[in-house]
Image (tube, rainbow, N blue to C red; front, side):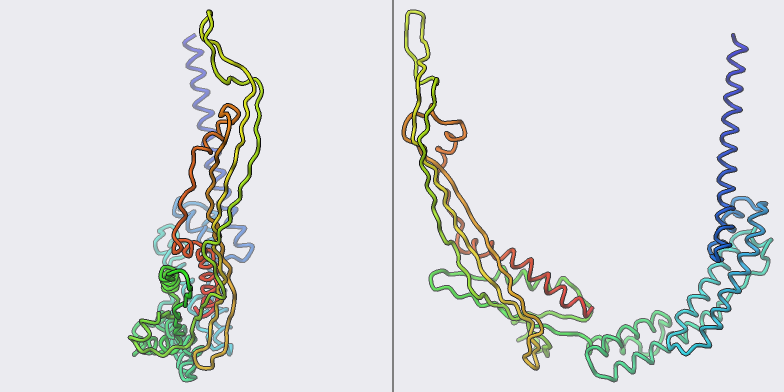
Amino acid sequence: MLKTIKFERMKLKIYSFAFASFLILSVVFLGCSSGKNRFEKGEYDAATQQAIKRLRSNPDKKKAVKYLDLAYNHAVDYHLSEIDRLKASQDRFKFDDVVWHYQKLNELYNEIIKCPGCLEVIPNPKIFQNEFNESSLAASKAHFEYGLEQLNLNTKSGGREAYRHFTTAKNYTPKYSKIDEYISQALSLGTVRVLIENIPVHSRSLALTNEFFQNQISEYARGLNYTFVEFYRESEYNALNVEIDEVIVMKFDDFVVGQTYIKEKTETIEKDSVKIGTVKTSDGELPVIGKAKAKFTTYEKTLTSSGLLDFQIVDATSGATLRQQKFPGTFVWKTDWASYNGQEEALTAEQIKMSKRTEAYPPSPQDLFIEFTRPIYSQLVRSIANYYSGLN
């Protein structure tokens, strides 16, 4: 019996070892196959990286050695031929792509020198740092010169275009002379300054304020943080005396607050075979079964508040309307209760509960005003964001 147990344990170890070996071989095979497939598809950078990865884990992998040599040399040839083609082109911003190709070549260099097994295959990988630096300078110069051209147009769109190209130039060459001054100048020129006018609210019978609604709009607009758009309230505009480009004008075409409607409904309810009382007998107190009847009246009171906001974006210089939309909003407040005349036994538990409720006090006119402007606010800010996102 003991011999049988030992034999079974030995078989289990052999099977476990065989399965683990199979998994390892499968991973190795798939890894080599992946590198080969990428090489055959012309993905020389990826094939090189795959071979480097395999050689880091096992420097003696023959297939990885073979494909590293092939893939790396093909990658270098491909990038250099593309660089020659780009340099010969008339594309003004050709050095953007040239920089990218040199960057890819240097990435391969950095990976190979960190892999001892790879250095045995590629003992002298090529680094193109000087070429990369020269191309970065050429790319920076191209963007800077184009930025100057756009800045000299002295237009909003030219300012925005100049800003983008100046920042690109700085990314290539951070120490470019006076680049921050040019970026600031372009940003100022390209920025659209928008005044959000106060919304007039006129009501003969109600003392209403739109301060909450107005503040929400201003806070949302500020929170957009668009690069080329600045929003101002009237109080800020008067204090700063800035030059406004566009004006957001809003007014309520019409609104009503707390329009009241009461609905009353009465029904007669009868219920058979219900306990309507008790009677004392010689056998004790017994229930009295009979018919119960009641008149049940329900009341529903609604207060409807609604309005229509006219929204316009106006050019501050010409007075032309750039966008106009109308946004509706409605809020309905409701309370309900009930009463009955007759026998409570005729009613359901829910009807009894409802009959114990009383009419609720409605919100104040100011709260009703705020509530019906909420759906208007959602439509309004979405329109503002969509319109000015095109300038960002």
